[in-house]
Image 1 (tube, helix red, strand yellow):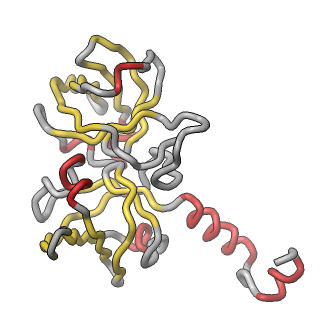
Image 2: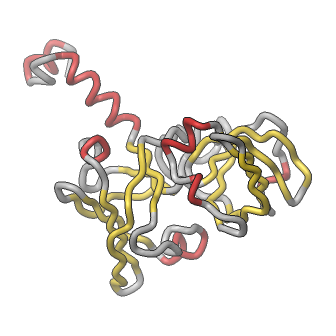
Length: 210
């Protein structure tokens, strides 16, 4: 489990390609103080397992399913990635509930500066858009963000200077792919509502104590 609060930007030192998989060697600085073999690290929002540690590098395997579902396959040597260790029980919960399980990818279609912020607009398929609501939470390349506006096939987030400096969110060009994880609570509500058939009604809420 993660929070979407990025700890640092790492750098891809080496990529070992398999037939349909790969192994990533990533350079980092801050995350080694308690990192152990088998720990989970979100790399651009993708939950990966640490397979070796030789500071300032660690490695993680990426299976075929992960390459199909995410944008990790597009990252090149020396590319920057957002890194976050799994959250500690009892720590501050600064973002929102992030699982590290990517729902799909979107495409950066616009970036506009607005005073001290950068508005980034992402296009996405309907299977992603159905879970996105204005002022709700969204995870982009591992970063917990608030949705500023929503249209039929796109949404916009507003990036503050700190997030722009500490993450990769504004580094990409228009047309670049970005990993998207929708709010897990929204996904469960949608699934529950679908199974109820008629949906959540006022009568249903009253019957269940709300």
